[in-house]
Length: 399
Image 1 (cartoon, rainbow, N blue to C red):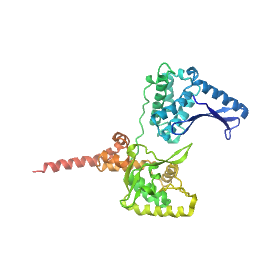
Image 2: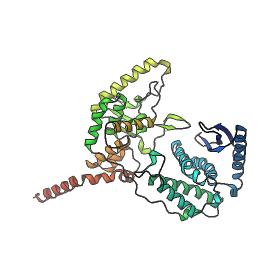
Image 3: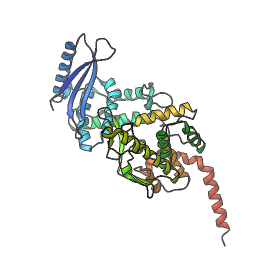
Image 4: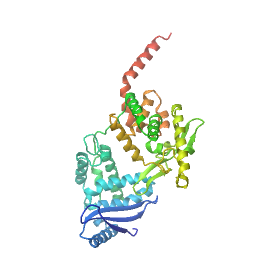
């Protein structure tokens, strides 16, 4: 095991509370792997003693599985798993958040060898029934969404599978725990009337936000893909963009351009409808004007959507702006990502093949598309029934 390093810092606004941070090193992509916990100590010297004790435990834990807690093993396992599977930084970050938010608080002092199927079952019941403090992960009843709970289940399955293979445990308790059930919340599909309300309300918003929303509705691009659009990838001849990069945010890295798309299907060319091309040229004019004013302070990313100094726009700032925009204008609740769903279901309802829609939206599989948006086709059942009836009548009239 690599030599560990650690730091102590005072927790803001909390008397006698300190945050201990232990750093394990870096994964294959150069991202720091670390663990944190909050402790009570009368002064910094006492907090440092607790840090030294914790680091010693972690150092020894890799050598003696009987002293290894579940969170400790997870911290050892994740960087190796990430390197082996060549996981994207954003995926590793999501795993780290699942461990920190859900696994670590529940199993903080539980030894890896003492985890039982019953203990795990109780853990998943708690996740499904207790109110969630994380707004983005809530279902309509305020509890953690079944999808997030299943993500925790699959993460723990991987952790215990490795623990068994590495002979840290004699049996895998996850083999006796069924995947948590629960009805996943289907994405809401919005009618044209709702989108018209959005278009009407956009007139009161800043120009860059207007263009972002309009492109989301008419291209089906992901939020990060839109923010990653570059003038270098735009062809004014045929009005298309080449999608090959995204803007992402990681706590340790900040907002950055990710040159690796979500999947290989994500790399694609998308059409900008003729009605929006003049607006795009207007945005380019704004870009050139601000770039000229900023001079050497300008970031040279050549992005279509940008901060005042040319740096990438943080994705969640767009999501938050959109949520406030919807609420302010009395429009039914929806997320920015739901605009992508609207685009996909419109193509479905108009009879385009799944293969064509996948190529346009960058989904990896037809099953993913149908799982998320296939239920929307029920809304077009009457139109489909009418079309089938008319087709049959037409066949009967043939000589």
